[in-house]
Length: 444
Ligand code: KIV
Ligand code: ZN
Image (cartoon, rainbow, N blue to C red; front, side, top):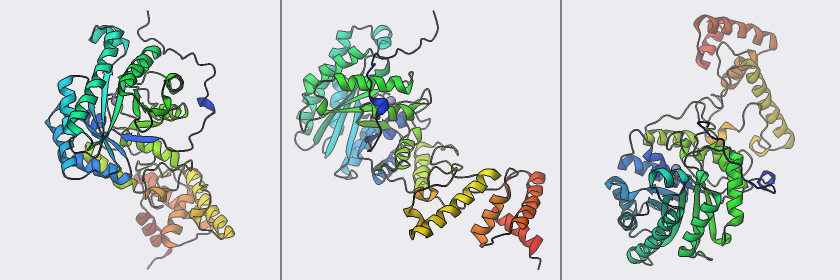
């Protein structure tokens, strides 16, 4: 007996997802205010929730899970406040999570009274470990919970919301990635038999990793299998909800989309339970950097980051893809030299084509995207410490002071700076470089 068992592969010899490309953004759902919030050391106050909600709306998210209203007064009151204060744009759908118990469903639907567009998201545990250890129930009983819950959601939505709300429904079999595929399918079919999806009446079937335990490829196989076997597929929005326990949530989401997922649920900067939900910023920017419009505005990444840090009371790592303080910065001399040459070549290519630099293909080594596209300046790209060489120092003088040093002078001056950084350690700022340059070459 081994303590940890390997993940079961899916028997799918004619899988097609490895041959696909992502050519359009999937639908996104932000669960920052639900899955993200529930994992915070200091959960968001109503004011912080509202800042997060407004940020998500400004960025362009059209589906936002705003809470778990039956879990307590804070979430319930927050949902009421954004509805009553008219904070939800007409084209944004809010979503609320509930367990499959009648009194919780009633309270959840009650929180949505007066909403223009709303989705109730019902989940129950379907994985064998829950059936065996937590509920001690059979497959049939677990399926019945999902089926009855769906019926109750429909009844309360009819009674409480009537025609005032464009009402949607989402179902999640919890720990989909541990649930036997045939059983996950059976439960989803049971739920669909109640909801009766058809044209203009989609159902969202969200297949959560819950705890990420398989490779992204196995996760993708499971999505392709479900996508192929579900009946009424045209009326199903198949949704992925990766978590990052193995550190591969972004890959899992991307491969799931290739394998048939229509939608991805996640959080900004990978906030969420344990190691987090999948990071919506990295996913969106990965598309952007391949020329695919993510349909989300990341042009002010530092403002997005500051707001998320305030709302979550948690810092974003300086090496976080696309958003960290250091991700467009080079300290090492060879990288600086290549970047400097890259910028110069792009300027020359643009001039030759009679175009602006923004209109030609991005080709600067070591910079995956143009920092300007996320609102960053070029000043932070090259920073100087003891690892830096003449190229970086020359770049700083050229960029800040329009000084094009001859090569011999670059070598000489970079030695002076290197002696300083070797002696003092740490980084030398552009102002300090200029001051040393003035002392050496421009004495008053
Ligand atoms: O990770 C998960 O399983 C969830 C469900 C509630 C969808 O967050
Ligand atoms: Zn989750």
